[in-house]
Image (tube, chains in turn purple, orange):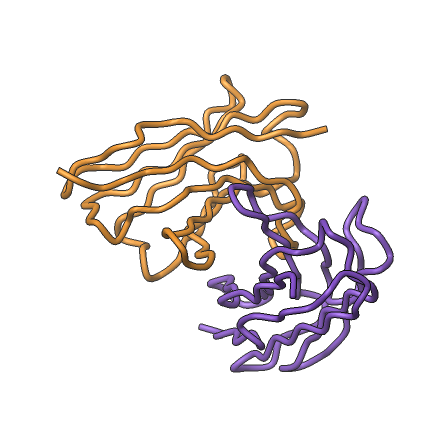
Length: 108
Length: 119
């Protein structure tokens, strides 16, 4: 099973600032099979990025993803108030599909 | 556009069976999509449970495999999850989700349903 470790656990930032979230895999993951999700309290996860760097439908271009092999990054260029949430990475190339433990982006 | 909605008992007794249904609307379950279950214990992260194709092919997380059954009812355009021998550790919000291919991200999610295992 591929273990995904996200860092930092919590990111305290102000609106307008840049957020950089990291996800490290215990084994190589094809970038074709890597995703990021956003989850707000009381809501289901929402797909942000797939194939590491492709934005899902309706996702604004302030969100971008990059990475390969074992190291992946989600960047939010300028935080909007609605971006404060928990973000999860996921690999779906090697079963069982696994998620990271999440990074909380909170208002500073 | 496809929408998903979970339903089922909110309380299950220990050693019992957790049974949930995910109703698919806005599209047919008999498409080239995979239908998944994911759960989230209180205050914790996401865990993939398993998924299936409308033909009946299915796969599940080895950590749960012997206890999980996922099935599809094409006539009702829904799919279901059965999890046997539940314990308090199975208390979670359960989500159903769609994948357009076996190796794709989950692009449509239900709103989730909370299941508590308690006597």
